[in-house]
Image: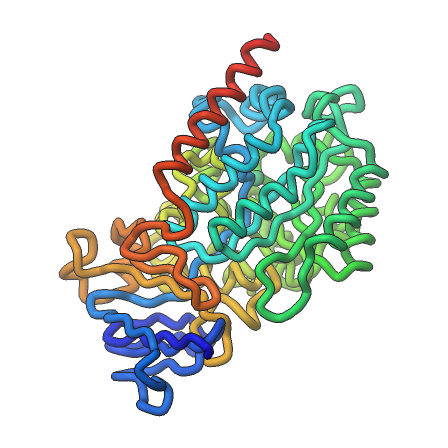
Length: 459
Ligand SMILES: [Zn+2]
């Protein structure tokens, strides 16, 4: 018998195209999908028999599960380092440590990072894994296993670097791979893990790392492979002025021109950061449907600048949110990115630059657009997958704020009360149900210490 879940008595922000909201509504879920949603109690016909699971939603706000569009999960094992560094300084300090990661590091880090995301209301996440030390095994397989154990929907990117220091790139030569090996591994990852079917829990994207760590040849070949196999493309772009200077010196163009020349603007591409764009570049993103993963907390941590989110949204660009790697965002939760996106947009452009509802849309439907899943995810509508976050707003953090969306985005709510992924409860009562948080914390503490010891022994 199909499991039916009935949630009643909650406020609901659907984030559908009409921005429909209910003050006191219901959501009914059958199997993996939403079968009814609206104001008041659920209709008898939708509720079903006594076997239905009933959830009392009083004091709660239902939103779509949040979607994380940029991460480097392995970095959970190197948090708190290079605290005053710019991006390039931070990378140069951390690359040699990352060269020592192994399957145990990646397992512990992915479990910790995804557990933190789930507790912050994130039901679907990407990851951008681009460090594959020789002999470390299939680290993509490891993190896909970790995501299955936590229970979130997962869109990992097979990342890559092939431009080492000796060829003018930023990373040391020991952490880059051969281009042919990268393409073969990328092709194999798609064959093994990519699930194009409706309701998929795992999909693959291809993601050469950045202009200063990847050759133009790999960028072109990766785009050709991704388009031939029907998967999406992702990379870092325009994160810092150092990168802009690198592109001017090496390629004679700005970062967006560089990508455009390589055939990398399009509606199958989403790009992390995009802090340093001019108006013409924003317009080109809008015209081509290129998506952006806005990572405000990481940009703040590294002092990179504030991305022009209001301008991008105004140009019709899908702007999702990303936590970025935990080594440049030790928080690692997505609810706090929503608040940071709102505040940073206002610091740059005044109090009307981004509304609470626009911030929620960044964290939900536009995140789904970036991952190519907006027909199934990112809003609460009949027929969509039941990825639902329920936030408690009657506690100290939210009580007394009349507008529930304002309470969520302006307020300090960080931990989700209930998180459903395809109707399955991953977080309940504010606690992770699929793994023991204390055990996950012990695992990552051990993995971080082991990695630090290996790095120390090599110095
Ligand atoms: Zn990143």
